Length: 221
Image (cartoon, rainbow, N blue to C red; front, side, top):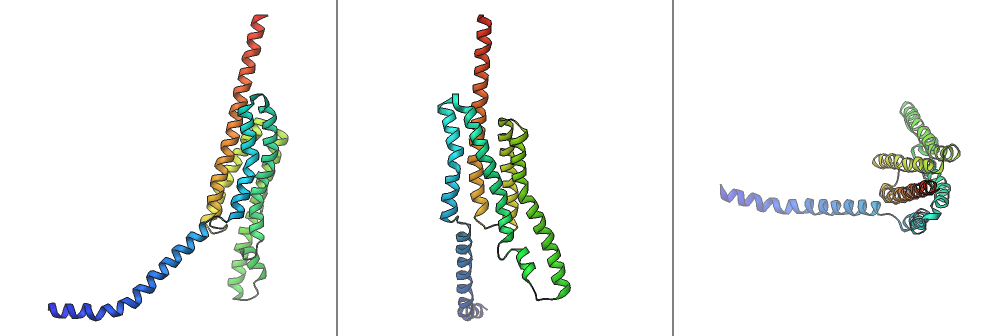
């Protein structure tokens, strides 16, 4: 019996090698491809970091010169309105890009009529919702600047960035955005939120100090 088992192993080994080696190579190729897809390209990485400078800069100036914090908040709110609008517009552009479901549906002329029409209908509804959602950040940013005071506007913007981040993460899981985009958005949003929170805290502290100084001056009078 042992002889037959040894003979079986010996006879099967040459048959298994040609199967195992290509499978291992294919697995390495898939892993390498996924790693490359998840790596953020240089241009978005550099430009994204550059886009953080006004946020970090206004927060830093506020920390070094607290007397300028209210001016820095106004600058930060104006710039934040632009950036929040841009972040929503990303999805508008991706929906229009070649290869998106909307583009594929509008350019497809082949396939079974019933299947094609159902696919086009579902993709059209999905892309219509995506187009609509891409305009929400701009509307929220503009409305908050026009109707709210500056601290409230910045708070609304911070909430908007994080809500949009959650949407981007969900879009990443569905393959609606490049594989590297959610990771880039995560650290960009973290820095933006921290900068806005720092500016708001410094402004609150500065306002409290001014109120206490005014109160002490009135008591002295």
